[in-house]
Image (tube, rainbow, N blue to C red; front, top):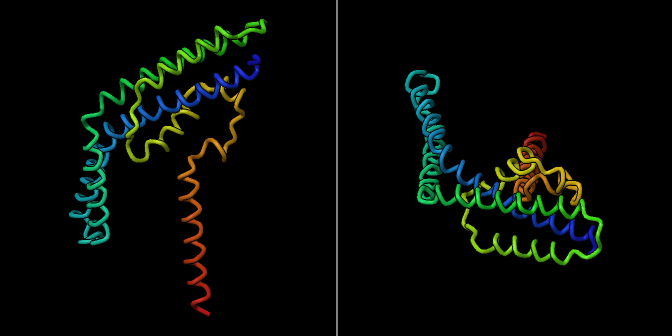
Length: 197
C-alpha cells in the first residue's frame, strides 16, 4: 500500500471512529440534558397558559405538550445506558487519538514499506470493533454531525477526505426531511393559490 493510500485509509477509519465517539457523546447528552429542558419548558408553558387568558385552554398547545412529554418518556428508556454511552465515547476518542498519532507518524515517514503501520492500523481498528453500542438515541446522529464537524479538530481528516458541506456535513435524514417539508409547502401554497382562483 502506498503512503498516500495508507494516509487516506487511516483518515477514513478515523472518521468512522471519531463519528462513533461523537454519536455516543450525543446520545449521552440527549439522555442527560434533554428531559430536564423538556420539563422546564413544558412547566413554563403550563404556568403561562394558566396565567394568561389569551392562551386559555388551547387544545393544540396541550396536545403538543403531551407529545413532548411522551418524547421525554422515550428518553427515560436509555437511562440505564448513560454511563455506557459516556464510557464508549471516551474509549472511541482514545482510539481516534491513536489513529491520529499513526496518521502523523506515517505522514512524517519517507520510507516505502508501511507493513508495520498497516498492522498497527488493523490492530487499532480491531480494538474499535471489539465493543460498540449499536442502539443509539433518536436524533443522536444529527447532533453527532454537529459535534464531529463543528466542535472537533478534524482538519487533518478533511485534508485527506475533502468533506463537502452538503454531501458530508448535513445528515441524509435531515436532507430528506427538508425535501419533504419543501414539497409539502409547495403543495400547500399551490392549493391555497389555485383554490382561490
